[in-house]
Length: 334
Image 1 (spheres, rainbow, N blue to C red):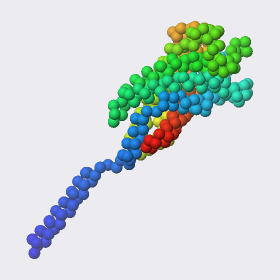
Image 2: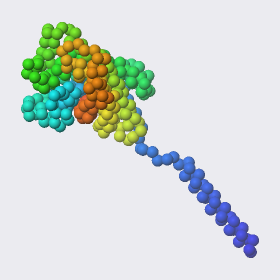
Image 3: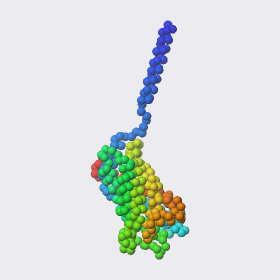
Image 4: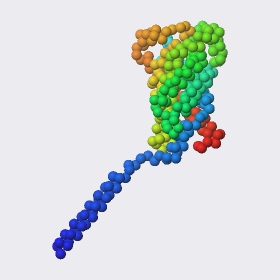
């Protein structure tokens, strides 16, 4: 009797042990919980990146964004070119413009800014998207090195094409801050460009073209390439999909990267373009460093980010809106 009881006990213990082992094996085999990414939504969102959109979409989206963020761009330029007893911070500069020029003064040079976007941004976006579509194999995502290379090249071309409008833009933004005798009084962007051509020659259209094109190349590489990279990552690894939230987050990160990388070149570009005489880059760098030290590299960084962050966000939100309307108009699956 005792042996039978012992046998039953041993059998029960073996059964419990087997059940426990089976449970542990099943738990080990069970995959870890991941974010629920809808494969169909992901596939559709990534397919949107293969669509060939009109060349001018980037310039149009950037022009809409410029209308929203122009006052911030104006404040940034005034800070970079400040002299004498001009305000030293963003809020002081903002209030100084409103007091001395009125609310309309915040939009000084808007026509030149729009002209710049219609040249510079049309080229940088259009060339980048065309090359990205052409050099990305079907069914694959473009690599980060490829995106950086293409965006750098297209940004450099955009910087050259928009340089004349950029010089006009900087001058018109700075004009009201100059002594009355030194003001140029351009009526609008086109008037400024053609007066520069008549009064200073064709070389005035290319004043500061190298720092400007270098900045444009850095801007494009740090803005477009990072936006596409962050957007693809959010679509691939989160359940967000191709939504406004994804576009907002990607453009905010891209704006931070672009501001930091472009700040030194942006300061040089503004100072070269604001003058009416030729000045070598090396001489300018020595002069700035002697007066301001290393901090010149990030002078105006906060207003630059407060301008470029919203500008980047607005540009890409407007761009994605352009694309969405285009897909619906063409009857493409959305």
